[in-house]
Structures are given as structure tokens and as C-alpha cells.
Length: 187
Length: 187
Image 1 (tube, one colour):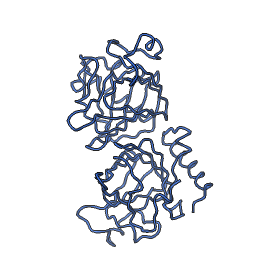
Image 2 (cartoon, each protein chain N blue to C red):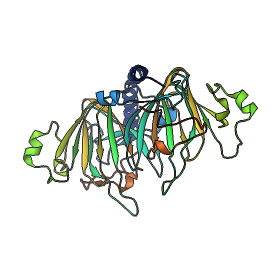
Image 3 (cartoon, each protein chain N blue to C red):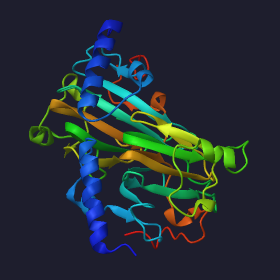
Image 4 (cartoon, chains in turn red, purple):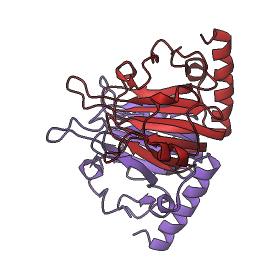
């Protein structure tokens, strides 16, 4: 379990990284920053700090902060009811990100794929299967189709990533690792 | 008519303002920056510099740059076919913006509304009718419903504004000033 003290320390650190990237937050945004440990209790390794600017029935925009080497674990955004699933665009603002994405014509990550990766999953490696590596530096962006497995990890300086997307329904996210609970890990 | 030399100078100036705000652009984004004079030919007074990050059938994200005192003239995003009209969220990143919005329970801007405004339209004042003033500084944001008349103008330092929205169909925008041609004024 990530304690409230640890969460508050994470908010402070993330706010400082955002400020360095030129992102100004209101006091309410700073206080409401989501600190997600995905229920694994090792925030430094597997976690994400999130400021949601807007999330309504038409679109969503957020800033994601990753500490150095911090990983957002593999998941996908499936369709449900009349919703075709979340499409999302990641734009790197500061630092660097290694993004791993399932490709249409590829099987799960093979041993040789993994050998070519710049970064390894921090733990529970068997639940990281997306095969293609995409490297994002400031100004680079990449769009992930709905229902596509993906995970990402910050480089040595950490990263600030703007996310533009269709509406977010975080509770519908499907993680490859069955131990992960997206919502239990939030706040 | 705004000459290509003036447009290129505007791109350079806007890119510099974006850089000061911490926004990194790729070379292609820098070169493709839209310089809109709305067909009025007085870019410094009535114009907008725009970098489109993504605009697909589900969502849109842009950076808008306004030079000091530069005005985006009054317009609305009407519904058409099956599309309910564009909803958009403006988030001020740097500088300051005065945003004027039509309110549901208000008539067109009255003389006393106009007296209370911090900024006046730069020209052709009769085509600026939205009555409510909203002041945005860095970290502030405001969401404009579809089909709602609005215009905005930067303060003395200019402004960088992130726009998050449903898909943009600029050619469907309806300007209050019948002389304005959104698309003829682009590029």
C-alpha cells in the first residue's frame, strides 16, 4: 500500500517536474493530482501521476508524469456498450518515454523483441507482451488505437506526457497483469 | 492580403513564444503552423497562429498563439448532419487571454457590458456581440459549448492557449462578421 504521505510526496515531485516543463497548475489541480500505484504498492517502479484537465462525454485531456524509470503497466481500452473504446494520443513534453505497443501483424513480444528493447519491465515481466518499441522525445507523439495492448516507461530524467483522447473510462481498462486493480490503486 | 513573408515572420514569432512556454515543436509542426488572418488582411490585429497536434473523427488538440492584443474574431461552431457541433476547452498556458462568450440567459452585449470589458474589439466592433468576459491566466481553463458565439484576445504579453476539443471542422465555423472567410485566411 502506498501511504498518503508517499502520495503527497509524489504529488510534490510531479508538480515540480510539470513546473520545469512550463506547465502551470491551479491549487485545486495540484491537490487533486491522481497518484496511481495500480494496487501493486511499489509506486516508484510501477505508477503514474495524472492531472485531468477535462474528461467529458466527448473528449479528454490530461498530463501524465512518470518519475525516472517509472512504468505504466500494460493495458488496453476495450469497447463496451456503444463506446468503441478509447483512442489516445501521447505527446512527450519533457524527458523521454519508451512506449511499447501491440501491432496488428505481430505476435506477442518474442525473446528477440525483448532483447531489442531499450528498457525492461520493472517486475512481473510475463505480463508485458506488446512487441513494438517507440521512443518519444519532446515534440514527438504517437496515437494508440482502441483495444490495443500498450505500456510505457520513462527514461532517466522521467517524463511529462500530454494525453489527448476520446473520453476516459479508467474503470473499463483491462490490464494484462491480473493482480492489477486500476481503481483500487488510485487516490 | 498577408504576404508569405509576413506569415513566415509570424510563424517564427509564434514558435519563439511557444518555446518560451516550454512547448517543443518538431520541424514539420513548425513549418506547417497555420497563420490565419481570417481574410481581413490585418494579421497583427485579427489573427491566430495554430499548431494542430491531432484532429481525427474522435478528438482534436491544438496550440493557439496570439500576439499581444491579437484577436480571434467572434464565431460559433454549429451542429451539422449528425455532428452536434464542436465543444472546446481553452487552457491558458502562458500570457493572458480575455475570452468573451454568449451566455444562455443574456442578450447580445449591451453598451454597459462593453463598458465593463477589459479590451475592445480591434475593428468592426458591431460584429462582436458575446456579452460575458472571462479572464484566463496560466492554469485557467474554460469550456465553450457548441453553437455558442465567442471571441478572444490576448493581453499585453500575448498568449499561448491549449485547445482540447471534439473534432474540428474549421470550414463549418460561422463568423459573426460576414466579411470573414476562415479558410481563405488560412495558410
